[in-house]
Amino acid sequence: MASSPFSDLSGKISTRQAHAGVIGLGYVGLPLAITLAHSGFTVTGFDIDPGKKVSLDAGRSYIEAVTDEALKTEVAAKRFGATSDFSELAKCDVIIICVPTPLTKHRDPDLSFVEATCRSIAAALRPGQLVVLESTTYPGTTDEVVKTILEKTGLKSGTDFFLGFSPEREDPGNRDFQTATIPKIVAGDGEEARELMQAFYGAAVKTVVPVSSNATAEAVKLTENIFRSVNIALVNELKTVYAAMGIDVWEVIEAAKTKPFGYMPFYPGPGLGGHCIPIDPFYLTWKSREYELPTRFIELAGEINSAMPRHVISKLAEALDVRAGKALSRSRILVLGLAYKKNVPDIRESPSLRLIEIIEERGGMADYHDPFVAEIPTTREYMALKGRRSVILDETSIRSYDAILISTDHDSVDYAALARWAPLILDTRNVFTRLGLMADHVVKA
Picture 1 (spheres, rainbow, N blue to C red):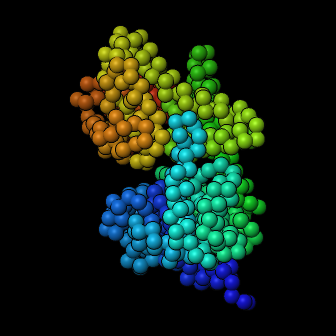
Picture 2 (cartoon, rainbow, N blue to C red):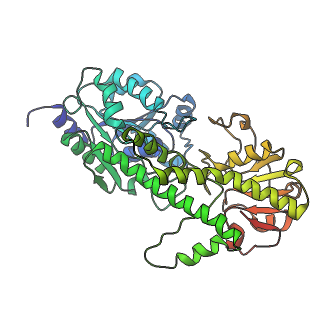
């Protein structure tokens, strides 16, 4: 076979000689980088945060999905290393973009991280490279934004370099699935790009699912998260309706899920957290405006889910008034759980941050306890909370609060002790019923 950018790269991938670069070493990028290294590729991780390189060089992982042992193994084998020098991208045969794609305050896509990363790649782009976007975004981003920036170099996608999209599917805290065992959607800009995507990811991931275009792959990721957002909004709405009727929505869901077909359980909560469900659906609502098409379900679900923190605080204020004869503005509240889901340290878009903010807006005093989050780090929207530390959870501290608000039901918390010592508990996760600890001073919200 005559030498060509496609055949040369295909050969490197099949023999594990391809050098991979992963840009963005967070919850998506670091597990992917270590998975690729474990499969035999040499991997360089790129991140603008120098602290991450220091930690990784020392063999200390800051992501639960990557153990220190797994990290040290790949570093010792010289299959993985980290850098903040983006000129090193020129040495990489495959470059994978795993950077944040947040929303603006007006719920428009913020692609500034993707665009800046693409400009860095363009500065090092050479023939024979495969560039992959994994960051969640609207259909068309890979071909319309990434490709446009890279082709300004004069190199052409599908001829000189290759371009693909493969949506991340990480689920922090899920011990049943890892990066290598979660089926991987792949697509490319042209047949050769798709073949390279299948070969590359197939070398590291158990199951690869090719689709016809990058836009289709982008839509797959959005569909997965819109499905969850809409169904969570439905049970959040049912929660308020059934509560007015004196019906426990949690009991209804537990009974309904015994049906072996035609039903899938979703659960209410204090609001949505994580990067995916609170943010990703709005990428499609934004893109749909280009086609003058409404996305009523998505937008309504967003409204319902976004209203949940205020609903919870209203229930808290009502419980304090009726059961303790005290106003929220004169109360001390402990928010239990800062992470957006149980048993992980991930606080991205956590409703707990909003709960604390609303309590203090209404004149109350709020602390938090989280066994996984010792201190609130810098966040985009809650800078005023930066530096606050998790309080100790003991009898003295528990009794000092007027109410405990269960926002995240971490398994390591002693809920029996909370039930004994707390004067009032607002439970948004149904944890006390699950554990057989319901009592008059435990209120569901």
